[in-house]
Amino acid sequence: MEKIFTKLIIFLKEVKVELKKVNWPTRQETIKYSLMVVGASAVIAFFLGGLDFLFTIIINRFIF
Image (cartoon, rainbow, N blue to C red):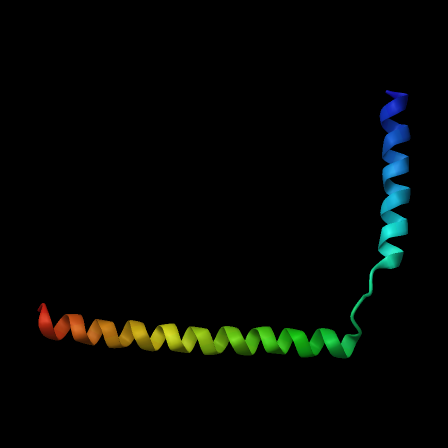
């Protein structure tokens, strides 16, 4: 049981060391990248929604 706690402590120390090496984005970068993701998602959603609308019209005209 003691061996598990020793391994856990070593693991957590290594995690702490690795987290210090991470290049965290600034607040401005985080906002910029988040807006880019939201914008790209909106564009793709409108594109797919438009295709769905177009295919619905086509199917309704030719099948029904």
